[in-house]
Length: 173
Image 1 (cartoon, one colour):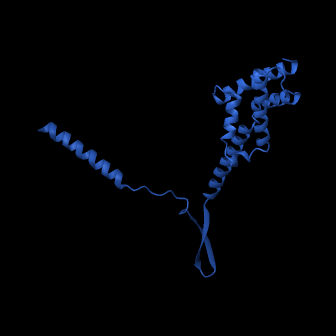
Image 2 (cartoon, one colour):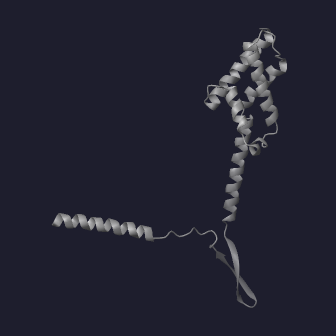
Image 3 (cartoon, rainbow, N blue to C red):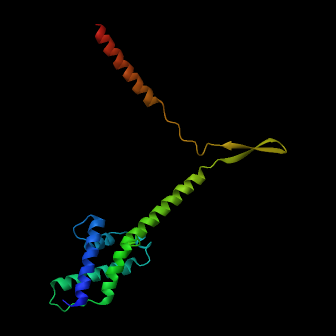
């Protein structure tokens, strides 16, 4: 192995171990690639360089396998080493594709929660009292929780009372 291959191999091993820890997997980078394979297109579109990252991960995995199992004439280039180092840093700084997707999903959930909170604000309803006078009353009908049906609770209480009466009656007799 030449110097580039040795350096690449060392950096790849670091990345592979990080991916193993991150994904709780034995396959490391391969698991990361498999997760990318299974990512829906709607989520892939949240990451501007998703396809490029996916292709480069597959490429550097191929380079690693070529170095490990080849005859010593690998196609390892400085750009491959740079990518592996940069991707390792992206995972640590939470700027890798899956971290970006998680951030976007969290932001969307926060916006949805905020939108829901805004929708439950009480709105005044104007009621005409006289031909020339209007005043506002608060209408809570649209954000009042539905009342639960008390019948199931009453049935349960009745059953408990009957059982209690049976127990007391059996103790007396």
